[in-house]
Image (cartoon, rainbow, N blue to C red; front, side, top):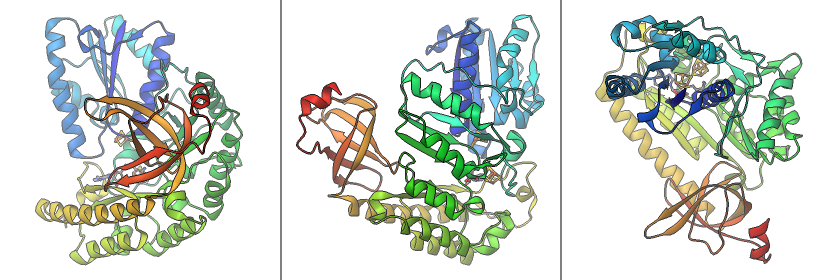
Length: 453
Ligand code: SAH
Ligand code: SF4
Ligand code: F3S
């Protein structure tokens, strides 16, 4: 059967989609990039904020026409919104055939078989994986970066605003032997870089293998040049982990460390289990491990404004923290109440106008700092790996190449033609708040040789 999977939300969903594709292909199904020929469409959904759910509902509405025309036999919702809304979705959307949660990824082939046998709607919301010992087959037809590999699933932190522990279940770390096998099969496929993911990736532990130890093990895989990881939780950061990032040769020096708020009072209400002082200590130590911190390391974060009870003073504390840490980048959100989470029940909800105004001020400050950090990078030299090539009518070939620290450098119409995965040095020549531009610096080496390499 021809199928099409569209993912919304975070890296977990991108990875889950790849895993389902591996399993479906192995069972003889075939992926297509054309909606009109798909007999099965799976929406791999996100429920983190209200807006994410609205996007999915809009998409379901758009897809109805394929059902009406008869080309689409089965429409399914998987991922976090599937788990959260469950049966309610099949009542709201009578033409839905399948609703499943992230725990049912490993059962996808069995669920599709059930559809083929005429069952409808098919539901799988039991939430606990039956695929935990699975090394997912790699179905990638071409090398596309970033390539994710989930090392753990679920979350035990239960931040009071967050739906994830309810949609993804409790924290489970995967067996390192299974992970290493999966990583090796990706390297055999041609990947030079892998991004290890988990909701709180640095809480990983399996027997006596904790996160820094796992980094060390993955660092030894022959042929793997770059190892990334996300997302870290401040409460599980250790100096040992930061030292591992600074010293292991293939582990990239990018720490994405969501702070959420700069106010200790709000952090406590969120149940984040660290203080702003703890956070500042971690970021100071991390930056101190590098001689030229801005080119040799990247520090990014997530921030929520308008959490219930957040006062103007609390918000000022967040701005103040941003000024102290000087993040290279940040994802910034208005708090969105999620049914079933403790914060949604709190009485002192902040009105939307205040949330919007705070978000705007926050974005403005963060943009200014990111721009200043970027300007400092001009003239610096560092290694990149080519991730994407595009052709522009005016600029010609544009390459997006990533620094070890995670930042993208754009190379406009360079003399040499590169391929995805090529690695070389660049000199940063220009920037904006969001983008860096650079020129290849081949250090006098013969460019022709580079082309063949
Ligand atoms: N597991 C990761 C992030 C998961 S969700 C972590 O703990 O850091 C990604 C980001 O979405 C969070 O860091 C948070 O900033 C934001 N987020 C989560 N729930 C939210 C909500 N209810 N409203 C607004 N933003 C939210
Ligand atoms: Fe959500 Fe907190 Fe878990 Fe992150 S650590 S997934 S924000 S509950
Ligand atoms: Fe969304 Fe679920 Fe990820 S809620 S952010 S897809 S874990």
